[in-house]
Length: 318
Image 1: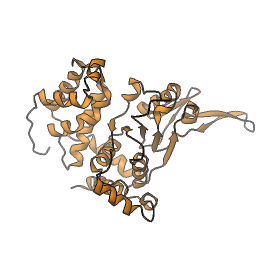
Image 2 (image 1 turned 90 degrees about the vertical axis):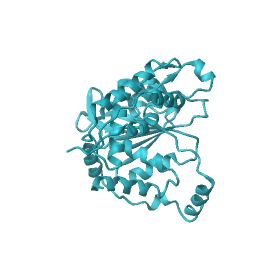
Image 3 (image 1 turned 30 degrees about the vertical axis):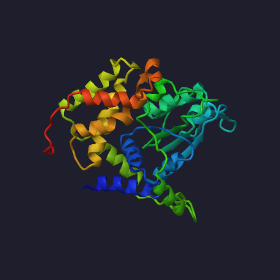
Image 4 (image 1 turned 180 degrees about the horizontal axis):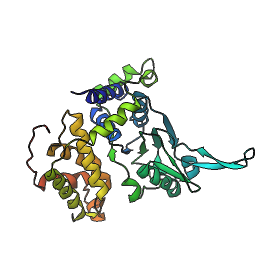
């Protein structure tokens, strides 16, 4: 195991001091971080969405800002704005909440489409444009947005263009009874998040992001990824399939998962593992499929089951 993999495991173990019994969720969050991707967390209130984001930021000593999205929040609150300085007789840029390493976009579907759209540029290009001037956000940069799946009153569903910019969609879920009992004992005297200490640095993450890109992907696996994504575009129960951005995200996620598991080459199983979190939010079901209670995960599982799995050599790259 090389040092970079040890760093990732230290981060995950550190976050687990706060988030109990959700190893896979924590792993996917860290995988997205090293892929320079964003995450949509869709779950019911009180399961630890905010604690997950805060603990990741603390674990890597990153700057962190929480934006509470409400109907009256403005795009300038996010991106920043220009203010006239009477002393210098010039306009000066006042940075918005987006100028941070880790951003928690809390209840993103509670704000207006106009404000939601203010995130489109920064989530794709890591920059914001205010009054014709472009400002880069700090790196690494990651948006983790939360939304409640059971409340619809006063919400604005995210458009397809916004959903497609999220690298993954995850759900934390309720803890098991035994895990919830353990949570009560951990929180008896104090919130463990308050005493959480960094175990890695921003520099570590930037180095790992570059290392992940060097993980070898066989040409046959490129075709395998394309076959999976292309099947979402031709499925009878899907009205809108995954975009090429989804193909790139699946490619990168498979590289990161292989890297995390100590390999410098990708296996078909790495791709299979990443299909659901990477593609589930990128497909729009037909109304008939929704009435039949068919879910995106059902369709993706059936697609992966039917597509021929290529055979690749498993020796390490020379």
